[in-house]
Image 1 (cartoon, rainbow, N blue to C red):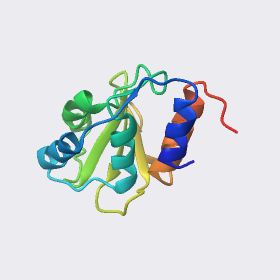
Image 2: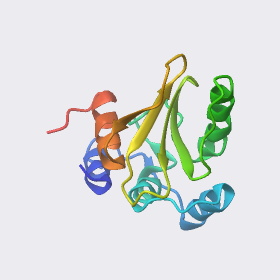
Image 3: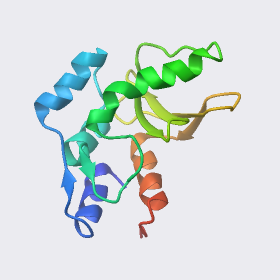
Image 4: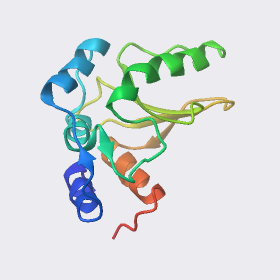
Length: 144
């Protein structure tokens, strides 16, 4: 599913979606000195502040985005790993799992994942759209 299909799916079940404004998305890009991929911007515009039951309990929304990279870098520094500048950390679950993407790899980049205690970073989705579709399923929604 693409982001717009996910948004429509969620709106039929929960109308509490709240997106970011253009200026808020620009603030993120400026703060991290990156150009965010179009698929991720679509997520931010449609549900970047609140997605109802979707990803509830996960740090993946606008206010949290400004601290995720620092939290992740702190965890990685204990293992002697550093993130490239063009990495955008956009998802964390309970502070020990993180997902991120390269901002220099197209508009629907692959998603990388790291869980504290694991030996390496791995790819968990071939693209952002697939990541969000998987999250939809893990949030308990039945997807056709």
